[in-house]
Amino acid sequence: MSETGLPAKRIALWSWILFDWAGQPFFTLVTTFVFAPFVATALAATPEQGQTLWGFATSASGLAIALLAPVLGAIADATGHRKPWILAFSIPFVIACICLWFAAPGSPHALTIALAGFAAATLCIEFATVFNNAMMTDLVPRTHVGRLSGTGWAMGYAGGLVSLVLVLGFLAASPDTGKTLLGLDPILGSDTASRAGDRATGPLSALWYVVFVLPLFLFTPDAPRRSALGPAIRSGVAALIASLRLARQNKRIFLFLLANMAYKDGLVALFAFGGIYAASQLGWAAFQIGSFGILLTVTGTIGAVIGGRMDDRYGPKLVLYASLALLIASGLGLISIDRDTILFVLPVPASTTPGLTGSLPELLFLSLGGVIGFAAGPLQSASRSLLVHLVPEENIGQYFGLLALSGKVTSFLAPLAVSIATIMTGSLAAGMSPILVFFALGAVLLTQVRPEK
Picture 1: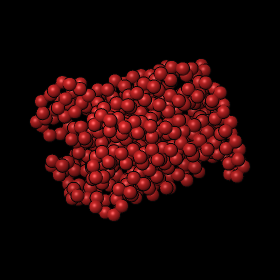
Picture 2: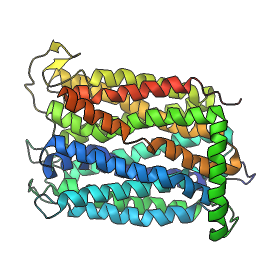
Picture 3: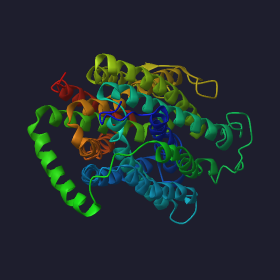
């Protein structure tokens, strides 16, 4: 039973869960493991320039989300409907993903197309996610939100895994053998200059989303309509202003939003630059980075499932603490690794075997990356679960808008801190270290958040 008292059928729940499965390939393929390193290594003049421009695109979309998501969430609460908003942002998301195909190396404005398409797609999928999140308490009681949220994240990771295997198995070739992960010739041709396999991640993300988001529209019930759009805009904006004041007055909600702001900034930067960092420090190409992504996705799926169960049993705060501890420890280990060194100062023999496990640094990098994947899913799942326990049901949408605001309003800070630290130290590893500070700050602020029992 949902909090509205209406029974939620199993098909309605699984159709809602499939939204995460539908949207995750964009984050896996485009944001992190395939398209981002492609932009930095094939379109930008240098990897440093690519990392900088990618950070600017991430920051621009984050700022737009920060400004608009709370307003849209408040309007959706006033109208009652959520699915029309999801549809409204799904259409431009699909178009923006398709545009990424046209960012071919050597073509006019390729870099501009890649960055603009990425920023627009990010903006739209994040907006759609706000309204999808707001549907949770229409489907299950709050005592089961943790499990529903964790299952959704696990399905998302699984979708990212399957899509990544498809790209590595049929589209992206190893630079050493010219073959895909399955030992096949790339179906889009073996011309490495065109980077067709990398560019195809955009259209693939679009097609995947269209196919798997359909059950949400067909089988998951929407909240009843409460108001027409015009009055809803006025009442929604007024309610948002009131919620901002209330959140400021309510110490636990305000501190949670600040904590979420800090650790989400760190997570955004970690995934925005993770692929670029692996390519620079270990010399991995897209094939190796994609294989690394498979590992992170598998451990992320496991972590999201376990985290959802632990959320319902022990509460979301404990899950958040454990996730942040793992992220800080593993992140510190990752920045201590390069091709010839581990733990900052210990030299290791050079790699003698091509691939992901040719040296001790690569093995350690893989292991720590797996832990990061395991922790990232529960961190995000438990964040939206904790919010449900903190806010009133009638304003759930606008508070999820505030959650998006807190996760995006300063999302430029961590990438900016990475850029500044890199410039000041001349070291990619030292440049990544501010991310750990954001995780630690989030953990400290979270100690002051005490949800009602």
